[in-house]
Image (cartoon, rainbow, N blue to C red; front, side, top):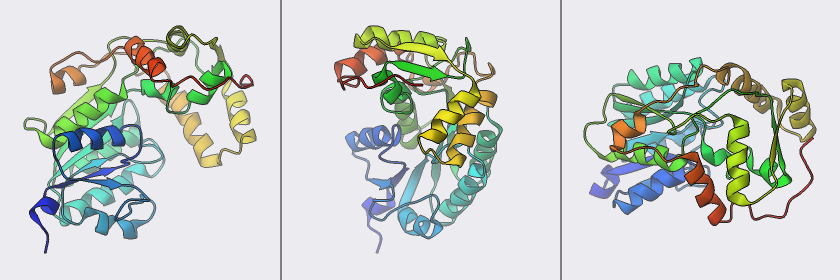
Length: 285
């Protein structure tokens, strides 16, 4: 028999990732029974192993959908749509999707969730500030050089804590159903600007260098990065970072009633927490 607690369970897919673990932490602080949707969860969840979906959804009332490797990846929308449809059949009443700005596949994923029959909220996010400390750019910061195929394109980097707080509010509060919250930071920064903020906050000698996409791809291949991941990187640094997202949005303000956190505040907090304390390695080629 399903207990009352199980009936109120919220599934957090990607519950150990940058956004997911913060969403789970906020739900826990609110006393919401939470299940982590991960490969090592109990029960486990894997986007690529559909036989794990049903058990993970059992007794779940609401779910946070964070697709791996990225909502912009080919086929993501179809997979997310299939999961959303199954969730509704299993009795899930509310879905909150982490989406991305300015991407066609992400938009298809949003439509799939919106058409699922569940109450829904979309959290459409800009690039995470935490990519410089917890994600793809962190090792490059420690090596002293971030080399990327962008030159002067600004991005309103958003703090992951803001993303998680918006998602948790949508999962637990009233007034968020049917909303698309486009979440950004409070100002536009180029990647060079962001690296400069990290250097100032951390006290490290870190520089930014523009490289060609071919150079980046060759470097990733040399590191053994799989071809699908390289293809996704190519898409992110061409289609998504072409200037279409060089604008601020008010999703944090609308959802939470406050201003979003500034990148400089993120960088100072990350530095104080020791995010860039590791010994420097060689520079990025």
